[in-house]
Length: 140
Image (tube, rainbow, N blue to C red):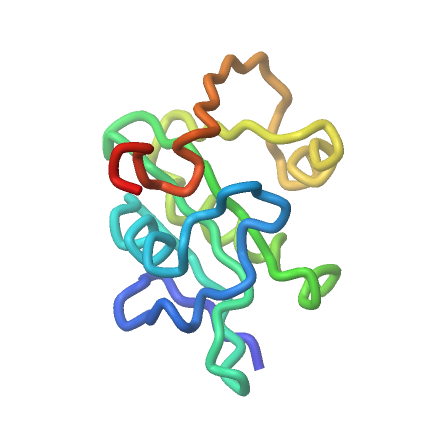
């Protein structure tokens, strides 16, 4: 059974395996747990039968006007079950008091976000791939 949580409190790194699919240098489960604890809001999908997180979404915010959703992921074996849609819907509810909620996505998933009421907009990004794991090159 999938249970949705609005907190990462009590989530252990061993419950966070398999995420960041396709990333050349993914964050460790320990770093992933730190990311979630440091987020303004987080929603998790927990498979209670397996005691593992199977999906998550995070938001960072100033808490007044704006939020940004940097991460949404569902483990491959749990996709196409509505978990991603539920995570986004719950996060939109969490952020409903804010003026703007932004995210940047690949073209391949644009229609998914449009179906959830989001509108396309121009975005600019910087990606420092040497820092993708969440650690600086000096700390390795």
